[in-house]
Image: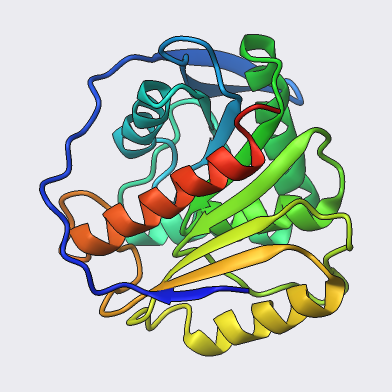
Length: 247
């Protein structure tokens, strides 16, 4: 394990121009709407993005475009259903609550999105997510049901393992990007996950960014911390280059 506490200030953050498109697909007979951004040039592999509790919005689309600009095929999945993008906090909690209570469905929806992504890019994949999407990413990693996965990455996501679940030693490498000032997902959660992954023999890396609160990568919010965002994105690019590029 490597702990990194970052203090370096970052320069302005250039965002990629929109390069992708919305994609309609179905899972279990229900309609969903993802977002696909193809690599600029030869593809280095596939990145599956799982949204936070807002649902799939322009935020995930921007991240997909950023990945496409770096040479990766990116697909943002939809776990809520086409047109279901909650705005009020209560509605967001309700949507995530449904999936936390039905984790089989959560996994099925992620796998359904992955299947759709592979119609567009049949490459080994890294799965990543933000906040709720980070928790969903780890949910998939524990399932053992996804094939050709080169790694998993979670940004300020939930880290707890539900009772009865666990990680197997053949789980693909995991990257955790966490804010040191996160009061929702605490350093106790980070330590517990580290212990669990260590005991399971899963390759992992945990990056902790000082002063960064929960949601530190969300552009335009009062929680956004440019330094931590850029540092964690650089760590993610290194992770992709190590475990995905060239596979």
